[in-house]
Image (cartoon, rainbow over all chains, first blue to last red):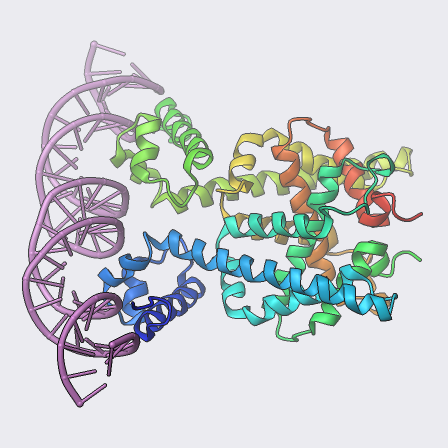
Length: 203
Length: 203
DNA sequence: CATTAAAACAACACGTTGTCCGTTTTGTGG
DNA sequence: CCACAAAACGGACAACGTGTTGTTTTAATG
């Protein structure tokens, strides 16, 4: 019995397709690129593309889903690891190490992320990212007490998740390449104390 | 000599095209819709579309540019008006009334804005909005002193503009319909004191 | 009501799409 | 190392949207 997932030809073809996709998104945008262009750049037969994907949107969705699956797996692993560290060093806080891990995972997929989150990328991925951040960072915790809120919760959610996504996009486009640790600290400074504080307008 | 801008047929045709565009963005998204679908829904001949627009992207760009032009005009008017009020009542602050006016202008174009900023809208418009907000709110002012910054300025910019855009999107999708005044206050609370403060986590 | 521009109509070549074939190449398990 | 299943190929197909053009019909305006 042969295995589709280990056949080198399959791996090679799929990789070529995905690399071509990322390049073409950067070059001319997801909307404008065609299946024909993908297969030409990937140097494969156009018919072969349709063996693995229905169309270009099926392709990007599968890439995106894969990213989120790995991210979710990583977070579960990170969570249990942090809990163990907490036993010996109780000062470790989960959210901080979690944010660092998320930035590390984004960094591992930097090319893809830069393309898909860039100005010619996939709008629906933005929404997926915001939803994912919200679910992961705020679901199942007791940080937010409804009765203490000074603003409607849906605006608080939108504010934080959009702000974080915006910072991630900026990070991907910057050349300075701050470390995941630095990025987590930057985000914490602005979210905990407010952008005005971070701008030096308040104390 | 006939005037293209007053001929009722021209006005009717252009309006039908733009209404059809908004509806189709909501229905199936900007990427997926075709010129043929626009003209069918607008009940005009497909050839007529090309008299006024090169393609669907030319159409959305012209709609977007029109929105920004009106917004810019409104802001200039609002600015001089606020300066006059300031003479009799010095407590009036420019940024607050400006944000209120911006929300009012978005509200006047609510259908279009909801579609174009929605999950199937135009990604490049998001960028345009962030750039516009930044230019309008922070250009030519001395709010931010570089030397006082606790985080790199580009991340501060990205954080604030993305957060604000996210709140606007949430507002467009909500049914509760907060007033522009309420929205300006909500945004101020979160930006001045920070999201954590707005969440009741700090004092 | 006559004038004249706008809109409708029809037909065109062109490119992409998605889906077929049958054929050739190639990696893998025995 | 070899046989073979599977993968990749090359080509063909109808269907569809695109952008353009030339002609006819319609309707706003003075």
